[in-house]
Length: 172
Image (cartoon, rainbow, N blue to C red; front, side, top):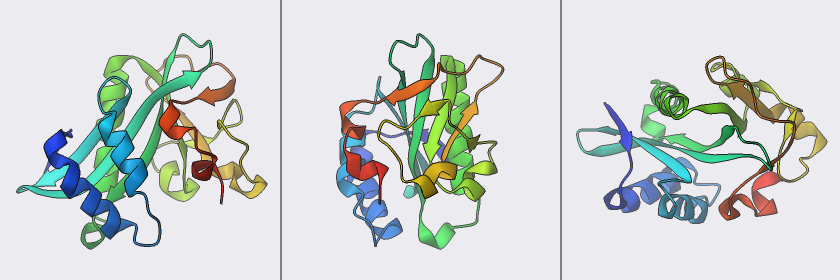
């Protein structure tokens, strides 16, 4: 299996994968916008085997306002349903962390299942806060992980690019 940055030629296959992986949620508009911004702002990685898209992860580069350190927001992350439990998501996250660490990113944040992301070392965060208030019962889902031994991000709300400034992504 190959883990590589996505290209514009991957767009149709990735959007089809989103529909398959998240039939109850429509993440295709978000995914399309993130794919359109891949590059300086967005790290978009795909898991590909024999030409078939098996997984995708996005890391959005961001940090609290006025923080000179670099951070990233992880999400979305998916693997094709037929291959769940085979380590595709874990491998994508590890590949992304390695690339971000090499860039000098200090900390990665995620809003997701604490049991799943805890496997990577993520822990609940109240130092760097989500860009929008989260429901109280979602507090354990807002998590962070420092990469290497770098100093973490400054406390404060995460300043995210426009694509993430929709409150719909931050609440039920």
